[in-house]
Length: 118
Length: 110
Image (cartoon, rainbow over all chains, first blue to last red; front, side, top):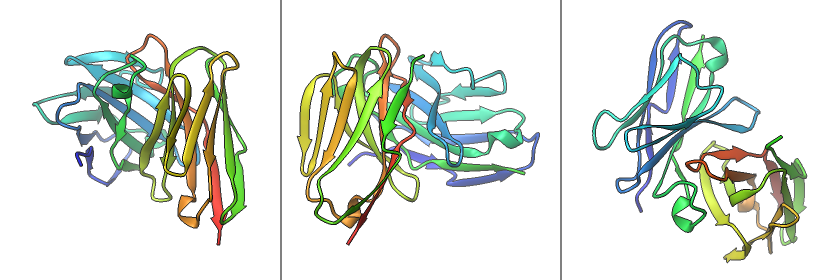
């Protein structure tokens, strides 16, 4: 069964450093998402991406964040200058459609990347 | 406020019990999702529904659009059902980004 993969599984970085989190969505999906979950808290939406551009972003997704689909398979989240409060689990997800209300809206999640900022 | 509320926050059950987890939301939706988060952190989509009822194995999800309420039921619960169950909604009109509830931590004892 196709699945979303994410690398690395755990990233440790120093405050102020740049990190790139990588995701390979399911190959025929068209909509891509990044979410984050701070330890002990609920999952929060960061950004959605469709047709090579950002569709929607949350207040969390400020100028320190960027997303890119550099080739036909990868989808990346870059944090330019990490802060302590960026420490969280970051989940990538993909879906065939977005917001239509049908089964193809089902989002498939990757296993997550745990980011630790020291 | 566009939020998703779940209850209970924590639930402990004996193996075999019938379990109900509730979800309510404040603003209209295009779809409501139920997801399962394993102890290791991975998230799996269980159901997506916009009306009525869906069943998959021992899991049943229902939604009442008028009352803005959904329930997830687990019949004949088993210790392997122990996980966090999360309700999330599509924000209608968006590209499918989800607004999540805080989750219900279920522990099923043998």
